Length: 211
Length: 169
Image (spheres, rainbow over the protein chains, first blue to last red):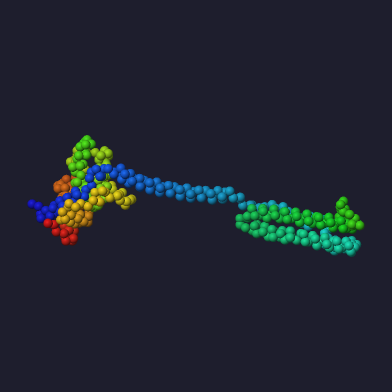
């Protein structure tokens, strides 16, 4: 014997079955769009997975590449100098020319017997030298300071050190050239006797004190 | 082994029942039931699964639908994407008696509250008119287990219907 609850449930389930049957899609409906639906259901997750994998791969490749570049930069960087770079020796005033300049000669004016005209000329030459050489000397001092700073960096900035060293060398050569020209002109002012007293060799181009 | 035309005709004859069973397997979600049924049909028609006369065709078919529903449920966590609604869903049936519709909707809501096993046991016995032993075979559980799901499911369903104040004619 079926309990009343079961009978009621059976009736309800029969109503549900009729309801479902009315809403059931036909067999053809289920079979027809199958390919497209299946394709999308397969393609979307597979496509998403491939895109995700590609993103991860690109990310990893990018990170590795960046790491390689940085390590390459480290390996390509010049090794730290074990000793200070060899700079061209800065010529001292004595090394430039042993001959005294106008100022030194003027100090010994009485001893050498310089006349008024020679004194004036030497004063003028000294002023001209100072006027022409001073900017170069200022530039040299500035470059020297920069070179000192570059040498004080850790690690030593070898590129900057080399650059300032080259600039210093160039400035020194220009100053030396000026001073040589100045000395030559000073010698032209002096007589042979005065040059002998100064202990400098007679320059072939020099005149006898202009007299 | 059935030939293709036989298979097709057998599927057609059981289509309504299969759809109802698919609904029971997916907590009465029509869209998902359609998907499950399609997938199950595809498996059968493509020969991915074969009927080998170890049980009745209906038992075997329901087993395939149930396994397909479980597979689909496992995949659901990965993608909640729903397929487009079926054409039949867009059409509102007008010939259905109001009493039938209300009863069906109330029962459908109540069934959706039950556990999957309980819903399956009740569906197979009340909806399909199968014995508990046949239900146990389709559910792939022991007879005692199926009976337990049946009893507990029935009690829970009646309680749920009473909560909603539903009385059947």
